Image (cartoon, rainbow, N blue to C red):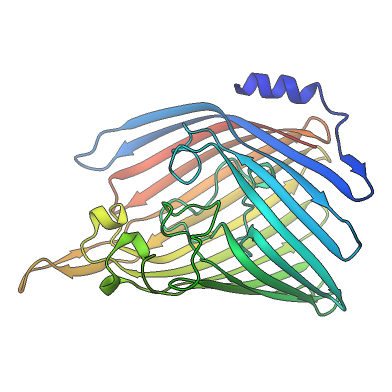
Length: 369
C-alpha cells in the first residue's frame, strides 16, 4: 500500500471524523505514508551515499472504553512495516499491542493508571500523525526519549496551573529487546524503571515542563547485553518550555541529558558510540499563516560524550564522541480536518563521524479519524 493509495483512501473517507459507538465506547485511528530521500556526504575515507523510501510509515487503531465516569480503558494496535528499520522491536514484527491500560479517576485531581502506556518524557510526539515534522529532531544517536513500558503511574492536578506525576515501570528503556520503543523489558526484580514530571502554566501563554527517568542496574537485563560487571544504571533529565507569542507564532525549546554509563570497548557494544552519554537540544518555532497552512522551523543537535578505555596494561585509546546539528523546515497543509499533507527539508552537519553532512527531503500524507 503506497502513498498514493493512502491519499486516495483517506480522501474518500473525510466523514469519519470521530467514531462514537455508544456512550461508553469510541474508536480512533490514523495512518501516515511518505516519500523520503536522504543523501549523505561521507567523511574522509567514507563514500557518499543516497537512499529513499516510499511506504506507509505506520498506523494506529485504538479504542477507548468508559464503563463508568471514573474508569477509562484504552487499547491500541500499532503497525510499522518490516522494511522500516526492521519493523517493530528490530525483529521484523509488523503489528503490536501498543496501549493497554486502565485509568481510575480517584477524584480531587488524582488519576491512577495501570498497564502499558507511553513515557512522560519528550517534547516531540511519539506518534507520527501528531509530530511537528516527518522526522524527529534529536533521536538519531543517543535516543534519550523512552517509549512504552508497563507499570503503574499516578497523576495529580493541583490546580489549573500545576500538575505532577510519577511512574514505576518494568524499564525506562527496553534493553533486552533491541532498545524497543513499543514495550518494556518485562522485568522488575533485576531491572526496573521510574520516572516523574512536573508541569507549570501559571504564566500566561507559557508552559514549563521538567521530567526525569531512571533505569536500575542489574542482571540479566543489562545495557547492550554486557556482563553484569559492566552494567550501569541509566538516568535521563528532560526540560522543555513552550511560549505562545501571539495567535500566529509559538516557540519552544528542549534540553535533554542522558547518562547510560560507559561501554568498555566500544564498536560492537555501542554501535560505534564511545558512550551512551551526552545531551540533546532543540529549538522550535511554529507560524500559522492560515487555519489550514502552517510551518515549523527547527534547529537541533546531539553531542555524545567522548571516552577513553584500555586495550592492554599500558595502552589506552581515546575516542571522540560524534555530534551534529540539524536545521529543518516543515510546512503543512490541512486539506480537510482529517487529511494533512506535510513536507520537510533538513540539512545535518556531523563531527567525529563517518558522515560529514546529510540532506533530507520528504513529503508525508496523514489521515486520522
